Image 1 (cartoon, helix red, strand yellow):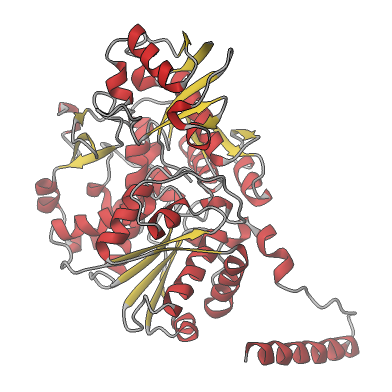
Image 2 (image 1 turned 180 degrees about the vertical axis):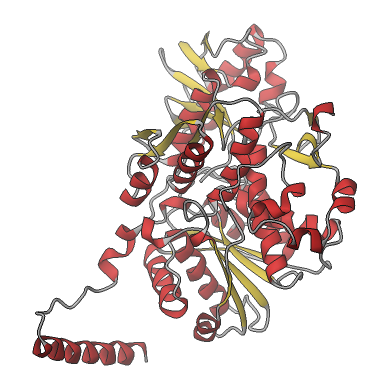
Length: 427
Length: 91
């Protein structure tokens, strides 16, 4: 389609709905026909010829080991994003009654401790290639952190937009990189609308708007890594949080691409999605058997996934249905319990989105929707230190003692009896 | 009723690159017809064959999604601002 992409394995863009082709510029909707979302098109024969398990294993310990599957032309912005741990979660598995559970821990992704570093590394690499000098985004927090940090590293101007009620950690974790930060009085969907209007008149690269086709491809690496880290095989079941639904669909695309180019043997993988009850438009549509989304106004502590009007919701429903998975929602109280459960059993401190995923995982096991022997992967997408407000009143407090042995002795005794009491309640 | 319509970049080729246009209409449906009258061809981008707004398009009246109002029958008043926004990814 464009002659300029000769070094690259990607060909251009195509409408996901009607298939209409477009050149690989800064555009995200099918403006000539149906307004469907645009998606990157690759030359899979070229990828198959260039890539093998050993070429990937010889690559950098970052998402760029999969660069042939990513929509860039030249050198990537590599800040060490990706290749995060896949933990075998034996203690959590035992607690839930599972035998083969893994945690994909993007709470320790680089540089800003969420899976958003994957999408932003790709989007800003492409933004630079397309000639943008200012980058921007509408964000529930994690995306703002990541865009500001990677823009700083790449020397790009940055102006990001967030809802004004975000957790302090997410605000500070953006401001420290010294972007221009707009805290908008409204929810994420309103921020997004404003940003779309700003994008109409300012010539900026909005990672989740006009760069969306490139941005969203970064999430595929969460699929590739799990395959590689499982020893080049697919899991049986994955559980991931649903906000806009994009991540979910791109994990699926990642699996499909590795099958298509012969890097992994095909087998069924069930896809289950997790939402917070206070913002569950996708779970509601799934439960009611609808293939369209009725937007909602979010009200949940899980702010990072509080998107009331999820663009990729219909695709997420389709994947859950097609693969025999499910989409479920949990309450804020269950989300906090999910955060604590993961921390206490596996030493992983996740944010509210991760608590949602663990709580839904637990619910699905209780409902018999996960076979105990299935190889199940739960995707943890963000770090708990960013959302400490959410759990502050639910985790007890330290024993304040004097610097004296007697003070310690009596506090230790109290601690032991508290522990016993907790165990008695748990049964 | 005179309303102001914010036009997304992908549709500005219909509006001579104008990001905002003023039109007369009393409902969103009427507004869509008025847009077609002024900018022939634009309606088929906004709506499917049955006249329903395409599912990847969001329409807001004074910042409120019309799916929380009366959908395409949503009434418009003098000075209202209508924003047309293609769906975006997020997080």
